[in-house]
Length: 547
Image (cartoon, rainbow, N blue to C red; front, side, top):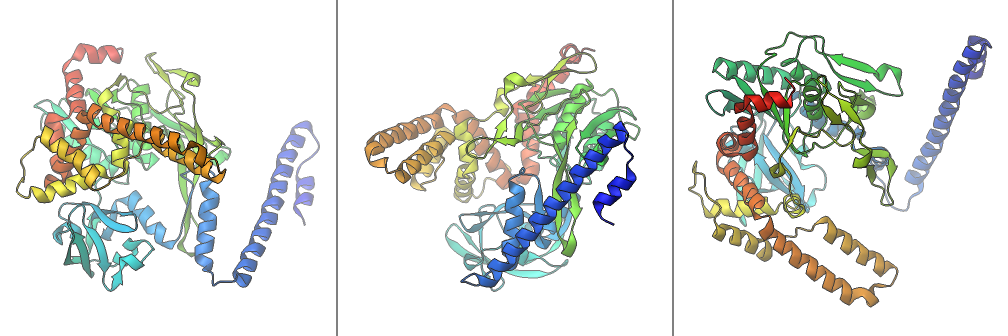
């Protein structure tokens, strides 16, 4: 019996049923269109693999085809092959067997970005800035795949490593161990009354670790809390709900999701008794606080439970779900948009509409819609969570963002670290001489820190070359480029305060790990100082929340 016959027998010709019939017919048309396109794709895939002049790699071709197809939808709908699945599960659970370090590949080089204190990479003596050049018998210069795949194994598995440090080749041995990625890497007291909790990601331990930190701080006498979500890219939606539940009553709506698929339309409420409904709470966010971070900050703002300070958050209002496929693969699909208790969707980029360069269009700020918190405060959708108190120091200039993107500060601090081996727990001052040394380092190492403007200018010249117009504009182009680069050098001086701050942060982390940096923050970070000052000013805190 074909699909058409099933639909004709199932639905009688009433007006209502006829409407349902057309939905069914639309699905049928989609079904046959999908089947048709799959058949075409299969034929192309087989034909090319069988007839192409050179040897092809069917697995790589399919992997790239699927990932390219999904990339056109949004950055969050992703296909994971067998190797990718392990990494994805690490991000969700926080547990894995590995080396305990953040690694990156830059210009074909595998660089240690951050060894975690007490874990295998740290025990083996690896430092931030080290370049891994050989794992076992594999020379990484000839290895184009993910180098982390060469370090897979059970607990106590051993790997001989060669690495380059300051131009010298060194050897060590890595012994794999269980690595527990903390969702709360640090918590402590800012002063006698104020507790500080850093929440860096939303893995399966996020709410339990946050609860543990909150309860311990209360036992130590904390009467108010600063929750730091800066740089937190998000994670599990359920954990965001549970973290809100620490501060709001059972049965409170935290987030709703809406989708074209009925089963993905859900309302998420708190299910547990809270830890503390009254403790004053300030949440710090910045432009890198995204997804679940925005659910927490947005819900606590809408419910008038916390004051949000910092800078506007990233603006990711989309929900993904991992779906297991055959052969150990997986696809993570954007299934819905989420909405805060007031009804806001804070998604900033519209992936359904793209500009001439294929980039998603950002929501126009003039078109943000106004919503009301529980006590009548006005909040807006469309562009992330706007803090109740905006702090300029959480925003970075274009030149500083470019320096971060190109690892200019990271590379300079690597050099600084080996020139100052005995700094230990001392907190240095970034002097004028140090900053001049940093600027000179950029020049001698030929480190580029192109702003978006400079990148756009160079793309313009590339287009002119294709159209054979470059000869007539070369002189003007070079003058403009020189002026732009001179301006960028001037910006190094104009924004040196924020750049010096990031240099100091990186230096502290090199000598004292992340724990040392967070300890430093509790006494010296400007945003934390302002959060504490607000909590000290009870009348101002209550005024903001309309208490």
